[in-house]
Image: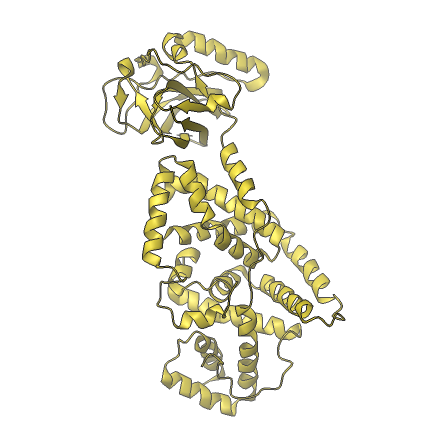
Length: 222
Length: 251
């Protein structure tokens, strides 16, 4: 759970460090586990997987919008990573590689299930048509989050991936570039376009844009 | 500053990527452009929404389910066998055994491969083709005789000697298949006279027959843990991976 928005945390974070952990130490620790797993140690892989469950699952939720499907994607990705571990050559960090596998797993799934878009559309209709009569703030927040998820699911995959990784999960440009296998400049431009697309969708859904402009748009993060 | 440029750097501003000069230019543009001002306000409204997103907790049983699936990877493969079989069974006997599978619908012809061989300890080991086989002699007093139930057949104690049997199924015959077997650190390959060899990776070319093909590997259990054995086969239009899981416990 984020205590502060990840985009605000990133401002103070050096490029390449995408979590509170010491990235170099984490990479070295994971590399040691990977080597053991590559030599057939199943328990080493399970430990490795355990340390990445949450990141893989969160990325899958961000991409698919459906927690149940995300769990399937996450499991499939971890199994695929297990099978492909022998081909991992330490060119990128293990986490980047694993999220790359997750991304490809999700894309493969989308390709295999062409009805995905229709399903998300149905989910969108259900979500948006839910009555908002309940005065509880929690419910409103939940509904807003659901609307955000629906809007995300309507973005093109290449933009959605970057928005999810950067704005929702707090990864740095460099790591996103590794995961998505594109240059950093492409990550930045996809982020801009993704955010712009998301903004338009959320305005169209009435989630944002109902307030009168207050000033010149300066960020609250200062 | 044009609107297109202003829209681009609106997003950058939220990442703290904007230079003071660009920030100043943007502020001036926004002062005179109602449409961009509105977009800026919407973006400002949207960003905390993204920041407040949190992943739902992992579903109950996620780790257990994954563990089960990992453990079950390759569980349908043959397991540890009596070492005597590796030494004593003649090639033709194994071929007949495979013929039985064929009769059962598997349409198999067998490749018999005796691994373990010889003093040739340079990785990757070039294993001999079936016609040039040197049999591994793994006859030791403490040899493992492990049979059913299947679960116990996947367990060895440290120091135990056994023959691991990996199976590769092919849909058709391939005369020049590339085979690769990778042993985990948990077991040591045994050669002539049950001598321990250093090789972990064995790669060679052989014929694969349609149906189940066996690879037999004499080993000694070396280190406690759960270990994964992998056999790969590759030929024109054919690629497969066979796996087995082995648990080594304390002696």
